[in-house]
Length: 220
Image (cartoon, rainbow, N blue to C red):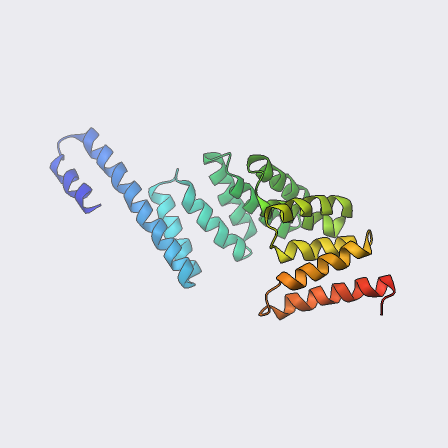
């Protein structure tokens, strides 16, 4: 950036060159602010990160990454409309980005807009058929609202891509309780095996489910 500024001083009489150098300096400046935004987010300063991403956008409004980063923070802070605005803007710049569709789907999900969330998750896996997170979230939507068979279909996909995903086994187990009790117990057992010991609330939820499955089977 300093080198470009010196070169800009050297071409004061050439307006076209000045414009070219200013544009290049802005892009470099935007990258600096983008990196700063990421570092601030990692340090826990989310508002500082938002401010840095905003500055990057001001300098390079056609750069996708600052919208992506700022949108993610807005989503975490439950500022859903702001997150959707940023993801929409990013998608106008890169319309085939599976991760952006996935993350916008998460925001729609949080807002309770299930149809919009499903559409974005499906779009994500149509672009990237190996997006396990999108398959899992599709399974989660149908696990809550049915039909369970559809939830299981998507959770099967998620597990085939991430066979060590305890959350997908847990969710599929709950779906199986009303369909195939033995498969439910098998999935709960697998989830217990995979769920970290330092996450007691998750493990309790799995044990609760397995206990319910045993009770339904009549195995007390």
